[in-house]
Amino acid sequence: MRIASADDPALALQTLTERDLPRIRGWLEQPHVRRVWSSPDEGMASIVVHMADALVAPYLIVESGRPVGYLQIYHANPDAFWAARNLPRETYGLDLFIGPPELIGRGLGTRVVRLAVGHLSALPDAARLHIDPAPDNAAAIRVYEKAGFRRAGEIDTPDGRSVYMILEPGRGMLSGQETRGTP
Image (cartoon, rainbow, N blue to C red; front, side, top):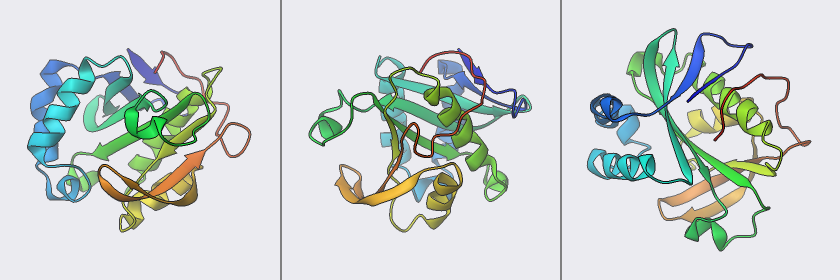
């Protein structure tokens, strides 16, 4: 599956395949990814599990035909951790990283998040999107705010303390983007 937008035709999300895993592994070993993602071994194990999980959609981020990162969209409500919280039905979460270090700080993250938000906003039942960066990850927080997310407090997650950021339809959700595919 491929998700793309007429607003940013150079950018796309392509379903992650097994042939993409060596590249993902290499990115997980990059210092800038290791600072905010789990260890490379844990990250790879998790991503491989997600490839077979109906509640998680893992994607390769592609810009102008070049693989540049990883994004996963997950349905939060059935997840044991999130089910214990008071989430509106049909809450979707995002996790992502940009792989090549030379692409950090160039606006790519904001573009990717906007593409994912545009896609998810087209789902008829999407009530909330959320993301949970570490409190010291100021660059990621800025990216998510630029894409329309707002801070809704801090929470303790299985990965540690996080800033809980949300975006809800009709209250900051981006619109007008054409998308193809499903989560």
